[in-house]
Length: 284
Length: 274
Image 1 (cartoon, rainbow over the protein chains, first blue to last red):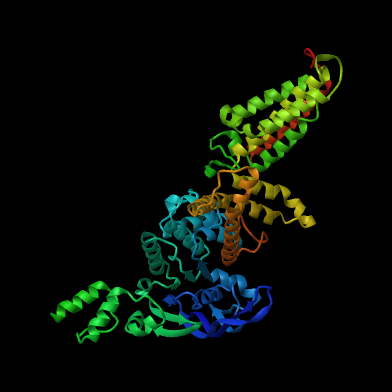
Image 2: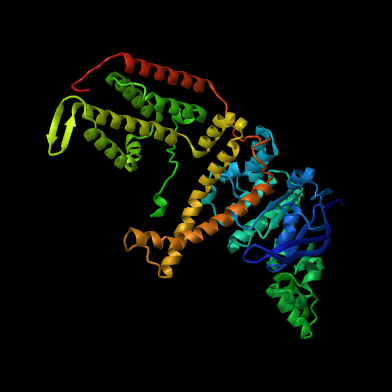
Protein backbone atom coordinates (compact mmCIF):
# COMPACT_ATOMS: atom_id res chain seq x y z
CA UNK A 1 0.00 0.00 0.00
CA UNK A 2 1.14 3.47 -0.81
CA UNK A 3 2.08 5.85 1.96
CA UNK A 4 -0.27 8.79 2.22
CA UNK A 5 1.26 10.69 5.10
CA UNK A 6 4.61 10.19 6.69
CA UNK A 7 6.37 12.21 9.35
CA UNK A 8 9.95 11.74 10.39
CA UNK A 9 11.31 13.13 13.65
CA UNK A 10 8.79 15.94 13.41
CA UNK A 11 9.41 18.76 15.87
CA UNK A 12 7.38 21.93 16.12
CA UNK A 13 8.35 24.72 18.45
CA UNK A 14 6.75 28.04 19.01
CA UNK A 15 8.19 31.02 20.76
CA UNK A 16 6.89 31.91 24.20
CA UNK A 17 6.57 35.62 24.73
CA UNK A 18 6.20 37.82 27.78
CA UNK A 19 3.71 40.67 27.97
CA UNK A 20 5.92 43.05 25.98
CA UNK A 21 6.24 40.51 23.21
CA UNK A 22 9.87 39.57 23.88
CA UNK A 23 10.78 35.96 23.27
CA UNK A 24 11.48 34.28 26.60
CA UNK A 25 11.89 30.72 25.42
CA UNK A 26 10.44 28.07 23.21
CA UNK A 27 7.73 25.54 23.77
CA UNK A 28 7.72 22.22 21.97
CA UNK A 29 4.20 21.44 20.79
CA UNK A 30 5.36 18.36 18.92
CA UNK A 31 8.45 16.45 19.90
CA UNK A 32 10.08 13.84 17.68
CA UNK A 33 6.98 12.34 16.13
CA UNK A 34 7.47 9.71 13.45
CA UNK A 35 4.43 8.03 12.00
CA UNK A 36 3.15 6.56 8.78
CA UNK A 37 -0.35 6.44 7.35
CA UNK A 38 -1.12 4.15 4.44
CA UNK A 39 -3.53 5.16 1.69
CA UNK A 40 -7.17 4.37 2.37
CA UNK A 41 -6.73 3.91 6.11
CA UNK A 42 -8.89 5.37 8.83
CA UNK A 43 -6.55 6.81 11.40
CA UNK A 44 -7.54 8.34 14.70
CA UNK A 45 -5.36 10.60 16.78
CA UNK A 46 -6.41 10.88 20.41
CA UNK A 47 -5.21 13.23 23.07
CA UNK A 48 -6.48 15.67 25.67
CA UNK A 49 -6.24 19.43 25.23
CA UNK A 50 -2.72 20.67 24.62
CA UNK A 51 -1.34 17.29 23.65
CA UNK A 52 -0.24 18.60 20.26
CA UNK A 53 -2.78 16.74 18.18
CA UNK A 54 -4.19 19.80 16.42
CA UNK A 55 -0.69 21.09 15.75
CA UNK A 56 0.13 17.76 14.13
CA UNK A 57 -3.01 18.04 11.97
CA UNK A 58 -1.98 21.46 10.73
CA UNK A 59 1.33 20.01 9.56
CA UNK A 60 -0.44 17.55 7.27
CA UNK A 61 -2.13 20.44 5.47
CA UNK A 62 1.08 22.51 5.40
CA UNK A 63 -0.56 25.30 7.40
CA UNK A 64 2.37 24.79 9.75
CA UNK A 65 5.83 23.83 8.61
CA UNK A 66 8.01 21.71 10.88
CA UNK A 67 10.75 23.34 12.96
CA UNK A 68 12.78 20.15 12.57
CA UNK A 69 12.17 16.89 10.78
CA UNK A 70 10.07 16.31 7.70
CA UNK A 71 6.46 15.70 6.72
CA UNK A 72 5.58 14.04 3.43
CA UNK A 73 2.06 14.08 2.09
CA UNK A 74 1.53 11.85 -0.93
CA UNK A 75 5.29 11.77 -1.41
CA UNK A 76 5.59 15.59 -1.34
CA UNK A 77 7.64 17.40 1.23
CA UNK A 78 5.49 20.05 2.93
CA UNK A 79 8.52 22.28 3.25
CA UNK A 80 8.74 22.58 -0.54
CA UNK A 81 7.10 25.91 -1.44
CA UNK A 82 6.44 24.79 -5.03
CA UNK A 83 4.40 21.86 -3.81
CA UNK A 84 2.44 23.81 -1.18
CA UNK A 85 -0.83 23.99 -3.15
CA UNK A 86 -0.58 20.37 -4.26
CA UNK A 87 -0.15 19.33 -0.64
CA UNK A 88 -3.18 21.38 0.41
CA UNK A 89 -5.22 19.98 -2.44
CA UNK A 90 -4.37 16.37 -1.64
CA UNK A 91 -4.92 16.72 2.12
CA UNK A 92 -8.17 18.56 2.81
CA UNK A 93 -8.89 19.84 6.26
CA UNK A 94 -12.08 20.23 8.28
CA UNK A 95 -11.88 22.41 11.37
CA UNK A 96 -13.61 22.48 14.72
CA UNK A 97 -15.83 25.55 14.49
CA UNK A 98 -18.48 25.07 11.80
CA UNK A 99 -19.20 28.80 11.48
CA UNK A 100 -15.64 29.93 11.00
CA UNK A 101 -14.82 27.77 8.01
CA UNK A 102 -17.76 28.45 5.74
CA UNK A 103 -16.92 31.22 3.31
CA UNK A 104 -19.91 31.30 0.96
CA UNK A 105 -23.24 32.97 1.67
CA UNK A 106 -25.05 30.09 -0.03
CA UNK A 107 -24.29 26.40 0.56
CA UNK A 108 -23.42 25.53 -3.04
CA UNK A 109 -21.25 28.62 -3.35
CA UNK A 110 -19.22 27.55 -0.34
CA UNK A 111 -18.67 24.05 -1.71
CA UNK A 112 -17.48 25.64 -4.95
CA UNK A 113 -14.91 27.81 -3.15
CA UNK A 114 -12.13 25.18 -3.14
CA UNK A 115 -12.48 24.20 -6.81
CA UNK A 116 -12.62 27.91 -7.75
CA UNK A 117 -9.28 28.41 -6.02
CA UNK A 118 -7.83 25.45 -7.88
CA UNK A 119 -8.81 27.00 -11.21
CA UNK A 120 -11.26 24.24 -12.14
CA UNK A 121 -13.41 25.14 -15.21
CA UNK A 122 -16.94 26.39 -14.43
CA UNK A 123 -18.88 23.34 -15.72
CA UNK A 124 -16.63 21.00 -13.79
CA UNK A 125 -17.13 23.07 -10.60
CA UNK A 126 -20.89 22.63 -10.82
CA UNK A 127 -20.50 18.91 -11.39
CA UNK A 128 -18.20 18.57 -8.39
CA UNK A 129 -20.46 20.69 -6.17
CA UNK A 130 -23.42 18.48 -7.00
CA UNK A 131 -21.48 15.26 -6.40
CA UNK A 132 -19.96 16.46 -3.14
CA UNK A 133 -23.25 17.71 -1.74
CA UNK A 134 -24.91 14.42 -2.65
CA UNK A 135 -22.07 12.50 -1.01
CA UNK A 136 -22.72 14.19 2.34
CA UNK A 137 -26.50 14.19 1.91
CA UNK A 138 -26.87 17.98 1.76
CA UNK A 139 -27.91 18.35 -1.87
CA UNK A 140 -31.44 19.47 -1.04
CA UNK A 141 -29.99 22.34 1.01
CA UNK A 142 -27.84 23.69 -1.82
CA UNK A 143 -29.69 27.01 -2.09
CA UNK A 144 -29.86 27.61 1.67
CA UNK A 145 -27.88 30.14 3.65
CA UNK A 146 -25.31 28.40 5.89
CA UNK A 147 -26.52 30.53 8.79
CA UNK A 148 -29.83 28.68 8.83
CA UNK A 149 -28.28 25.20 9.16
CA UNK A 150 -27.64 23.18 12.32
CA UNK A 151 -24.08 22.58 13.52
CA UNK A 152 -24.00 19.05 12.14
CA UNK A 153 -25.30 20.21 8.79
CA UNK A 154 -22.72 22.99 8.65
CA UNK A 155 -19.94 20.48 9.30
CA UNK A 156 -21.30 18.28 6.50
CA UNK A 157 -21.20 21.28 4.17
CA UNK A 158 -17.61 21.92 5.26
CA UNK A 159 -16.79 18.28 4.49
CA UNK A 160 -18.45 18.61 1.07
CA UNK A 161 -16.32 21.71 0.46
CA UNK A 162 -13.22 19.61 1.08
CA UNK A 163 -14.34 16.65 -1.04
CA UNK A 164 -15.06 18.98 -3.97
CA UNK A 165 -11.31 19.54 -4.17
CA UNK A 166 -10.88 15.79 -4.74
CA UNK A 167 -8.35 15.18 -1.96
CA UNK A 168 -6.73 11.81 -1.34
CA UNK A 169 -6.84 12.39 2.37
CA UNK A 170 -9.14 14.28 4.73
CA UNK A 171 -7.92 15.56 8.07
CA UNK A 172 -10.72 16.30 10.52
CA UNK A 173 -9.57 18.40 13.46
CA UNK A 174 -12.09 17.76 16.24
CA UNK A 175 -15.02 18.13 13.87
CA UNK A 176 -17.56 17.16 16.51
CA UNK A 177 -16.25 19.12 19.48
CA UNK A 178 -18.84 21.89 19.13
CA UNK A 179 -21.80 19.72 18.16
CA UNK A 180 -24.65 18.15 20.11
CA UNK A 181 -24.90 14.33 20.21
CA UNK A 182 -27.13 14.23 17.12
CA UNK A 183 -24.77 16.45 15.16
CA UNK A 184 -21.85 14.25 16.20
CA UNK A 185 -23.55 11.10 14.95
CA UNK A 186 -24.47 12.85 11.72
CA UNK A 187 -20.90 13.93 11.03
CA UNK A 188 -19.33 10.59 11.97
CA UNK A 189 -21.80 8.72 9.77
CA UNK A 190 -20.89 10.99 6.87
CA UNK A 191 -17.18 10.42 7.41
CA UNK A 192 -17.70 6.67 7.59
CA UNK A 193 -19.75 6.74 4.37
CA UNK A 194 -17.08 8.72 2.56
CA UNK A 195 -14.38 6.38 3.61
CA UNK A 196 -16.26 3.44 2.21
CA UNK A 197 -17.47 5.01 -1.02
CA UNK A 198 -14.77 7.47 -2.01
CA UNK A 199 -11.88 5.43 -0.59
CA UNK A 200 -10.21 8.48 0.90
CA UNK A 201 -7.74 8.29 3.73
CA UNK A 202 -9.31 9.73 6.89
CA UNK A 203 -7.34 11.18 9.78
CA UNK A 204 -9.71 11.95 12.62
CA UNK A 205 -8.46 14.02 15.50
CA UNK A 206 -10.60 13.87 18.59
CA UNK A 207 -10.76 13.48 22.30
CA UNK A 208 -13.90 11.37 22.25
CA UNK A 209 -12.79 7.76 22.48
CA UNK A 210 -16.13 6.40 21.23
CA UNK A 211 -15.39 7.92 17.85
CA UNK A 212 -12.26 5.90 17.23
CA UNK A 213 -13.68 2.38 17.67
CA UNK A 214 -13.85 1.80 13.91
CA UNK A 215 -10.40 3.18 13.15
CA UNK A 216 -7.76 0.99 11.52
CA UNK A 217 -5.15 2.46 13.76
CA UNK A 218 -5.08 4.79 16.74
CA UNK A 219 -2.33 7.08 17.90
CA UNK A 220 -2.49 8.55 21.39
CA UNK A 221 -0.62 11.80 21.93
CA UNK A 222 0.52 13.41 25.15
CA UNK A 223 2.81 16.42 25.60
CA UNK A 224 3.81 16.37 21.95
CA UNK A 225 4.79 12.71 21.88
CA UNK A 226 3.03 9.74 20.37
CA UNK A 227 2.71 7.60 23.47
CA UNK A 228 0.53 4.77 22.23
CA UNK A 229 0.06 3.32 18.77
CA UNK A 230 -2.03 0.35 17.73
CA UNK A 231 -5.44 -0.98 16.78
CA UNK A 232 -8.37 0.28 18.83
CA UNK A 233 -8.50 -3.06 20.61
CA UNK A 234 -4.85 -2.92 21.56
CA UNK A 235 -5.23 0.64 22.81
CA UNK A 236 -8.44 0.06 24.71
CA UNK A 237 -7.07 -2.95 26.52
CA UNK A 238 -4.72 -0.66 28.46
CA UNK A 239 -7.34 1.16 30.47
CA UNK A 240 -5.01 2.32 33.24
CA UNK A 241 -2.49 3.81 30.83
CA UNK A 242 -5.28 5.65 28.99
CA UNK A 243 -6.51 7.13 32.25
CA UNK A 244 -3.00 8.33 32.96
CA UNK A 245 -3.15 10.33 29.72
CA UNK A 246 -6.42 11.89 30.92
CA UNK A 247 -8.58 10.28 28.25
CA UNK A 248 -12.19 9.34 28.86
CA UNK A 249 -12.36 5.61 28.39
CA UNK A 250 -15.83 4.43 27.30
CA UNK A 251 -17.93 3.07 30.16
CA UNK A 252 -18.21 -0.42 28.69
CA UNK A 253 -14.48 -0.73 28.43
CA UNK A 254 -14.02 0.38 32.04
CA UNK A 255 -16.71 -1.99 33.24
CA UNK A 256 -15.18 -4.92 31.35
CA UNK A 257 -11.76 -4.00 32.66
CA UNK A 258 -12.96 -3.85 36.29
CA UNK A 259 -14.73 -7.19 35.93
CA UNK A 260 -11.60 -8.73 34.48
CA UNK A 261 -9.54 -7.44 37.38
CA UNK A 262 -12.00 -9.08 39.77
CA UNK A 263 -11.23 -12.38 38.13
CA UNK A 264 -13.92 -12.81 35.50
CA UNK A 265 -12.76 -14.41 32.28
CA UNK A 266 -13.22 -11.43 29.95
CA UNK A 267 -10.79 -10.55 27.16
CA UNK A 268 -9.10 -7.17 27.27
CA UNK A 269 -10.14 -4.30 25.02
CA UNK A 270 -13.92 -4.61 24.88
CA UNK A 271 -15.18 -1.76 22.70
CA UNK A 272 -18.93 -2.15 22.35
CA UNK A 273 -21.84 -2.83 24.64
CA UNK A 274 -22.99 -5.78 22.48
CA UNK A 275 -19.58 -7.37 22.75
CA UNK A 276 -19.63 -7.27 26.54
CA UNK A 277 -23.16 -8.63 26.67
CA UNK A 278 -22.16 -11.55 24.48
CA UNK A 279 -19.08 -12.35 26.54
CA UNK A 280 -21.02 -12.16 29.80
CA UNK A 281 -23.77 -14.42 28.47
CA UNK A 282 -21.21 -17.02 27.47
CA UNK A 283 -19.74 -16.88 30.99
CA UNK A 284 -23.08 -17.62 32.59
CA UNK B 1 -34.46 43.96 18.37
CA UNK B 2 -30.96 43.96 16.98
CA UNK B 3 -31.96 41.48 14.31
CA UNK B 4 -34.32 43.92 12.63
CA UNK B 5 -31.35 45.58 10.97
CA UNK B 6 -31.14 44.50 7.38
CA UNK B 7 -28.17 45.51 5.33
CA UNK B 8 -27.88 45.16 1.60
CA UNK B 9 -31.62 44.68 1.36
CA UNK B 10 -32.59 42.44 -1.46
CA UNK B 11 -36.16 42.02 -2.58
CA UNK B 12 -36.53 38.59 -4.18
CA UNK B 13 -38.74 38.68 -7.27
CA UNK B 14 -38.60 37.47 -10.83
CA UNK B 15 -38.38 40.63 -12.87
CA UNK B 16 -36.33 41.60 -15.88
CA UNK B 17 -34.33 43.93 -13.62
CA UNK B 18 -33.45 41.07 -11.30
CA UNK B 19 -32.14 39.07 -14.22
CA UNK B 20 -29.93 41.80 -15.63
CA UNK B 21 -26.17 41.49 -15.33
CA UNK B 22 -25.02 43.31 -12.15
CA UNK B 23 -22.47 45.26 -14.17
CA UNK B 24 -25.27 46.75 -16.26
CA UNK B 25 -27.18 47.75 -13.15
CA UNK B 26 -24.14 49.30 -11.50
CA UNK B 27 -23.14 51.29 -14.56
CA UNK B 28 -26.73 52.34 -15.23
CA UNK B 29 -27.17 53.52 -11.63
CA UNK B 30 -24.03 55.64 -11.78
CA UNK B 31 -25.08 57.16 -15.12
CA UNK B 32 -28.58 57.80 -13.79
CA UNK B 33 -27.24 59.52 -10.67
CA UNK B 34 -24.97 61.77 -12.70
CA UNK B 35 -27.72 62.59 -15.17
CA UNK B 36 -29.91 63.89 -12.35
CA UNK B 37 -27.52 66.81 -11.93
CA UNK B 38 -27.14 67.70 -15.57
CA UNK B 39 -30.41 69.56 -16.19
CA UNK B 40 -32.35 72.44 -14.71
CA UNK B 41 -35.66 72.71 -16.55
CA UNK B 42 -38.88 71.26 -15.27
CA UNK B 43 -39.20 69.27 -18.50
CA UNK B 44 -36.14 67.25 -17.49
CA UNK B 45 -37.78 66.36 -14.20
CA UNK B 46 -40.83 65.14 -16.07
CA UNK B 47 -38.73 62.82 -18.24
CA UNK B 48 -36.86 61.53 -15.17
CA UNK B 49 -40.14 60.91 -13.35
CA UNK B 50 -41.58 58.90 -16.22
CA UNK B 51 -38.37 56.86 -16.50
CA UNK B 52 -38.30 56.17 -12.76
CA UNK B 53 -41.94 55.07 -12.70
CA UNK B 54 -41.36 52.70 -15.63
CA UNK B 55 -38.30 51.21 -13.90
CA UNK B 56 -40.16 50.74 -10.61
CA UNK B 57 -42.98 48.95 -12.40
CA UNK B 58 -40.46 46.75 -14.25
CA UNK B 59 -38.67 45.83 -11.02
CA UNK B 60 -41.86 44.39 -9.44
CA UNK B 61 -40.68 45.81 -6.10
CA UNK B 62 -43.77 47.16 -4.29
CA UNK B 63 -43.87 50.94 -4.00
CA UNK B 64 -44.43 50.67 -0.24
CA UNK B 65 -41.24 48.68 0.16
CA UNK B 66 -39.26 51.37 -1.64
CA UNK B 67 -40.82 54.08 0.53
CA UNK B 68 -39.82 52.18 3.66
CA UNK B 69 -36.20 52.48 2.54
CA UNK B 70 -36.68 56.23 2.49
CA UNK B 71 -37.33 56.50 6.23
CA UNK B 72 -33.72 56.73 7.46
CA UNK B 73 -32.95 59.64 5.11
CA UNK B 74 -35.99 61.77 5.97
CA UNK B 75 -33.95 63.84 8.44
CA UNK B 76 -31.34 64.56 5.81
CA UNK B 77 -34.05 65.52 3.35
CA UNK B 78 -35.67 67.89 5.82
CA UNK B 79 -32.39 69.61 6.62
CA UNK B 80 -31.54 70.20 2.93
CA UNK B 81 -35.07 71.40 2.35
CA UNK B 82 -34.92 73.94 5.20
CA UNK B 83 -31.47 75.20 4.34
CA UNK B 84 -32.41 75.77 0.71
CA UNK B 85 -35.71 77.32 1.66
CA UNK B 86 -34.35 79.98 4.02
CA UNK B 87 -30.83 80.61 2.87
CA UNK B 88 -31.25 81.10 -0.88
CA UNK B 89 -32.37 84.62 -1.64
CA UNK B 90 -33.37 85.05 -5.25
CA UNK B 91 -36.28 86.84 -6.87
CA UNK B 92 -39.43 88.07 -5.16
CA UNK B 93 -40.16 87.51 -1.51
CA UNK B 94 -43.28 85.38 -1.10
CA UNK B 95 -43.30 84.98 2.65
CA UNK B 96 -41.72 86.94 5.42
CA UNK B 97 -41.96 86.72 9.20
CA UNK B 98 -39.52 88.07 11.78
CA UNK B 99 -36.04 87.17 10.46
CA UNK B 100 -37.31 84.44 8.12
CA UNK B 101 -37.82 85.21 4.49
CA UNK B 102 -38.79 82.80 1.77
CA UNK B 103 -38.04 83.86 -1.76
CA UNK B 104 -39.20 82.42 -5.04
CA UNK B 105 -35.74 81.16 -5.80
CA UNK B 106 -35.43 79.59 -2.37
CA UNK B 107 -38.69 77.69 -2.71
CA UNK B 108 -37.83 76.52 -6.22
CA UNK B 109 -34.39 75.30 -5.20
CA UNK B 110 -35.64 73.61 -2.05
CA UNK B 111 -38.37 71.65 -3.80
CA UNK B 112 -36.27 70.68 -6.81
CA UNK B 113 -33.34 69.61 -4.65
CA UNK B 114 -35.62 67.47 -2.50
CA UNK B 115 -37.06 65.83 -5.60
CA UNK B 116 -33.55 65.20 -6.90
CA UNK B 117 -32.48 63.58 -3.64
CA UNK B 118 -35.59 61.39 -3.55
CA UNK B 119 -34.96 60.26 -7.13
CA UNK B 120 -31.33 59.63 -6.28
CA UNK B 121 -32.16 57.43 -3.31
CA UNK B 122 -34.97 55.62 -5.09
CA UNK B 123 -32.75 54.88 -8.07
CA UNK B 124 -29.85 53.51 -6.10
CA UNK B 125 -32.01 51.52 -3.70
CA UNK B 126 -33.76 49.95 -6.68
CA UNK B 127 -30.39 48.57 -7.64
CA UNK B 128 -29.80 46.95 -4.25
CA UNK B 129 -33.38 45.66 -4.16
CA UNK B 130 -32.91 43.82 -7.44
CA UNK B 131 -29.33 42.61 -7.01
CA UNK B 132 -28.15 40.02 -4.48
CA UNK B 133 -25.10 41.05 -2.45
CA UNK B 134 -23.06 38.38 -4.18
CA UNK B 135 -23.96 39.59 -7.64
CA UNK B 136 -23.14 43.07 -6.46
CA UNK B 137 -19.63 42.15 -5.33
CA UNK B 138 -19.07 40.09 -8.48
CA UNK B 139 -20.18 43.02 -10.59
CA UNK B 140 -18.00 45.48 -8.69
CA UNK B 141 -14.99 43.21 -8.96
CA UNK B 142 -15.42 42.88 -12.68
CA UNK B 143 -16.07 46.58 -13.26
CA UNK B 144 -13.12 47.71 -11.15
CA UNK B 145 -10.74 45.20 -12.68
CA UNK B 146 -8.90 47.89 -14.72
CA UNK B 147 -7.86 49.45 -11.38
CA UNK B 148 -5.88 46.28 -10.71
CA UNK B 149 -3.31 47.60 -13.15
CA UNK B 150 -2.49 50.45 -10.79
CA UNK B 151 -2.19 47.90 -7.95
CA UNK B 152 -5.60 48.35 -6.37
CA UNK B 153 -6.39 44.96 -4.80
CA UNK B 154 -9.78 44.68 -6.51
CA UNK B 155 -10.31 40.96 -5.97
CA UNK B 156 -9.37 41.22 -2.31
CA UNK B 157 -11.77 44.11 -1.74
CA UNK B 158 -14.61 42.15 -3.34
CA UNK B 159 -13.74 39.08 -1.27
CA UNK B 160 -13.74 41.16 1.92
CA UNK B 161 -17.13 42.58 1.05
CA UNK B 162 -18.69 39.18 0.54
CA UNK B 163 -17.13 37.78 3.72
CA UNK B 164 -18.39 40.79 5.65
CA UNK B 165 -21.88 40.12 4.34
CA UNK B 166 -21.66 36.49 5.36
CA UNK B 167 -20.59 37.39 8.90
CA UNK B 168 -23.11 40.15 9.60
CA UNK B 169 -25.81 37.75 10.85
CA UNK B 170 -23.26 35.71 12.82
CA UNK B 171 -21.85 38.77 14.57
CA UNK B 172 -25.35 40.12 15.23
CA UNK B 173 -26.26 36.86 16.90
CA UNK B 174 -23.07 37.04 18.90
CA UNK B 175 -23.82 40.61 20.00
CA UNK B 176 -27.22 39.43 21.15
CA UNK B 177 -25.63 36.65 23.19
CA UNK B 178 -23.02 38.93 24.75
CA UNK B 179 -25.69 41.49 25.65
CA UNK B 180 -27.75 38.84 27.37
CA UNK B 181 -24.69 37.51 29.15
CA UNK B 182 -23.79 40.98 30.43
CA UNK B 183 -27.38 41.72 31.45
CA UNK B 184 -27.42 38.44 33.36
CA UNK B 185 -24.33 39.69 35.19
CA UNK B 186 -26.12 42.88 36.15
CA UNK B 187 -25.10 45.23 33.35
CA UNK B 188 -27.52 48.10 32.86
CA UNK B 189 -27.81 48.88 29.15
CA UNK B 190 -31.08 50.78 29.04
CA UNK B 191 -31.00 53.66 31.51
CA UNK B 192 -28.94 56.84 31.69
CA UNK B 193 -28.13 59.56 29.21
CA UNK B 194 -26.38 59.10 25.90
CA UNK B 195 -22.93 59.24 27.47
CA UNK B 196 -23.76 56.61 30.08
CA UNK B 197 -25.37 54.43 27.44
CA UNK B 198 -22.29 54.69 25.27
CA UNK B 199 -20.15 53.72 28.23
CA UNK B 200 -22.29 50.70 28.95
CA UNK B 201 -21.58 49.48 25.41
CA UNK B 202 -17.91 48.90 26.26
CA UNK B 203 -18.46 45.54 27.99
CA UNK B 204 -20.30 44.43 24.87
CA UNK B 205 -17.90 45.76 22.26
CA UNK B 206 -14.72 44.42 23.83
CA UNK B 207 -15.72 40.74 23.83
CA UNK B 208 -17.31 41.20 20.41
CA UNK B 209 -14.04 42.49 18.96
CA UNK B 210 -12.03 39.71 20.56
CA UNK B 211 -14.35 37.12 19.12
CA UNK B 212 -14.40 38.79 15.71
CA UNK B 213 -10.61 38.67 15.55
CA UNK B 214 -10.61 35.03 16.58
CA UNK B 215 -13.14 34.24 13.88
CA UNK B 216 -11.11 36.14 11.30
CA UNK B 217 -8.06 34.12 12.24
CA UNK B 218 -9.93 30.82 11.95
CA UNK B 219 -11.50 31.81 8.67
CA UNK B 220 -8.19 32.84 7.16
CA UNK B 221 -6.76 29.46 8.08
CA UNK B 222 -9.75 27.63 6.63
CA UNK B 223 -9.44 29.63 3.41
CA UNK B 224 -5.75 28.85 3.08
CA UNK B 225 -6.42 25.19 3.78
CA UNK B 226 -8.76 25.28 0.81
CA UNK B 227 -6.01 26.62 -1.42
CA UNK B 228 -7.12 30.25 -1.47
CA UNK B 229 -4.28 32.37 -2.80
CA UNK B 230 -5.87 35.57 -4.05
CA UNK B 231 -7.56 36.23 -7.34
CA UNK B 232 -4.88 34.95 -9.67
CA UNK B 233 -5.64 31.70 -11.48
CA UNK B 234 -9.03 31.52 -9.85
CA UNK B 235 -12.04 30.40 -11.85
CA UNK B 236 -15.61 31.47 -11.18
CA UNK B 237 -18.56 29.32 -10.34
CA UNK B 238 -20.90 31.94 -11.79
CA UNK B 239 -18.91 33.86 -14.39
CA UNK B 240 -20.59 37.05 -15.60
CA UNK B 241 -21.65 36.96 -19.23
CA UNK B 242 -23.44 39.70 -21.14
CA UNK B 243 -26.56 38.60 -23.00
CA UNK B 244 -28.63 40.44 -25.59
CA UNK B 245 -30.85 41.70 -22.79
CA UNK B 246 -27.90 43.37 -21.10
CA UNK B 247 -26.78 45.09 -24.28
CA UNK B 248 -30.30 46.37 -24.85
CA UNK B 249 -30.36 47.70 -21.28
CA UNK B 250 -27.10 49.56 -21.85
CA UNK B 251 -28.55 51.13 -25.01
CA UNK B 252 -31.75 52.17 -23.21
CA UNK B 253 -29.86 53.78 -20.34
CA UNK B 254 -27.57 55.73 -22.66
CA UNK B 255 -30.56 56.87 -24.69
CA UNK B 256 -32.32 57.94 -21.50
CA UNK B 257 -29.34 59.92 -20.22
CA UNK B 258 -28.88 61.67 -23.56
CA UNK B 259 -32.62 62.32 -23.75
CA UNK B 260 -33.10 63.65 -20.24
CA UNK B 261 -30.12 65.97 -20.51
CA UNK B 262 -31.17 67.29 -23.94
CA UNK B 263 -34.79 67.82 -22.90
CA UNK B 264 -33.88 69.19 -19.49
CA UNK B 265 -31.51 71.75 -20.98
CA UNK B 266 -33.12 72.86 -24.20
CA UNK B 267 -36.87 72.38 -23.75
CA UNK B 268 -38.07 75.19 -21.53
CA UNK B 269 -41.12 74.53 -19.40
CA UNK B 270 -42.41 76.92 -16.76
CA UNK B 271 -45.23 76.35 -14.33
CA UNK B 272 -45.76 79.07 -11.70
CA UNK B 273 -42.33 79.74 -10.20
CA UNK B 274 -40.71 76.54 -11.44
